[in-house]
Length: 295
Image (spheres, rainbow, N blue to C red):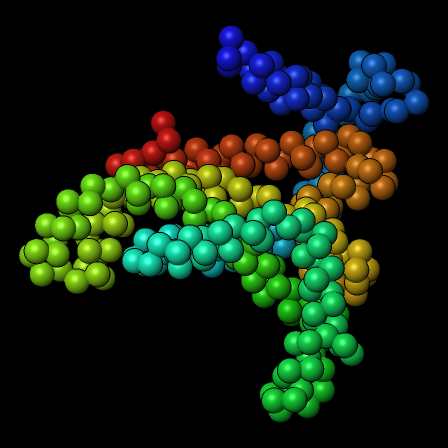
């Protein structure tokens, strides 16, 4: 009885909407009506998918999505692990709780605020970052952080790490807390220093947690942060459109703005199928190489 509401919620909001994927193989006609549009729209087979994979804008968005996901995984995935380990080594409880609480706060800030904050801080004329680097003589003229595509990857990585590392570290902190403290005591008696204890006790004990979260991270390579990239696009419009166009924003523009519902559904279906394939590959690779997996 306790689980039933959650099961009903998942069926209504996660499984029933999957019936709408049928329009990926049709030319959906909205004017037939919300129900008849699903049942009476003409079948076109794989036309929508063929069009997507021959569209250079879709391929560009796919490349951007994978690039930003790889960068976030490279820099963002180790960050909460390192933070959790370092926080575990802090002996002062007040100091430890303070930093732990402060690290959580960015998670509760909306991406709309983050993008607006970046717009103000990195502005060419009044931005504090440009003012500082100009006064220090690092550059001779203001840098166009928000009007140059070469700065977008750095902004994506820094924003993601800053906003998520504290919240994501909760799982690792919980895993570290569950380690038997006598292991550390025995290692200290044997002469092991802090780095040795981290390498031979902490990391092996949380290895299973790291592997599970890494598998989920790999599965999300085909998806990026829609809110952040859409806000960046709205702030600077077409100036950095090529650098901020990802699968999520591309699907939004095709489906909502251009009302190409069947095409957008096909792109969304491709992303979901690709995520499942990546999950299976990551899981089987982990089981074969590390001896641990989700299933």
